[in-house]
Amino acid sequence: MKLDILAFGVHPDDVELSCAGTLMVEINNGKKVGVIDLTRGELGTRGTAETRKEEAAIAAKIMGVHVRENLGMRDGFFQNDEAHQLQIIQKIRQYQPEIVICNALVDRHPDHGRSSKLVSDASFLSGLRKIETSFNGEAQQAWRPKYVFHYIQDRYAEPDFIFDISSVFDRKVESIKAYGTQFHNPNPGADEPQTYISTPAYFETIISRHKMFGKRIGVEYGEGFITEKRIGINTFDALIQVST
Image 1 (cartoon, rainbow, N blue to C red):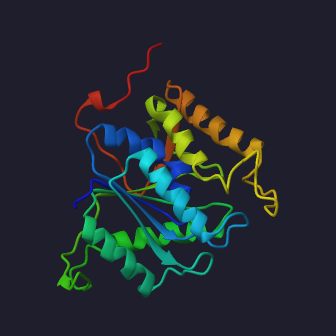
Image 2: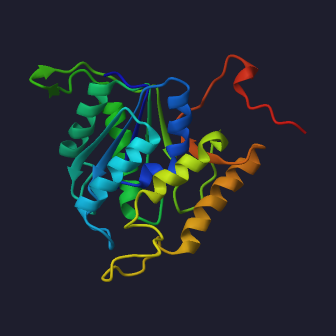
Image 3: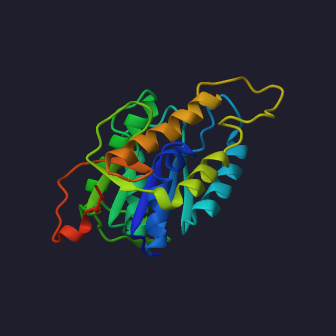
């Protein structure tokens, strides 16, 4: 299946927190969209790799994505090296997305920035025909996405553009809440400690950030992105018309 957009998250829930709204709007626009998680999130303080897998499947249904896979890289210990790049190159060539979306360039969690560079490098290398990969026993053709966008995570960054997600924001919140082991849950397991992201206050910061991005473009909710190259338009109709 060829995809229009392929979103990568180093941990299950990164995509939901950061760009699920954009993906859902584009699905509503008729685009084919996939999500690939690099790790199982097995080092997370709460929950397990198995519960994260179940939660990711529920979130995928809420988002309506056409594909969701997990590459099974080692949480916390994967590297931006040839072996890991080849795993991502194989997926990019398999799905041939026009747009790749991945983690923040810089963030408080070291996995986020490292995976961002890994996916970005692999996206470029995927276009080099002398790098050989195969899928189901057949040689793959070189493929380079037209754009690589980085979503914004906990550390504040100035977005290059903001996507209006007002029409799907309630579903975005549903997709995040699918991760009951990770975020605020009034009935957590007896042995589950409180963490930075499991407090009610953290969830409020997520909502506030999307409101802030939305306000900056005159809509209710938005998701911010950083682009690796300039975006061009050929009609002013591509711009959001904000009433004054």
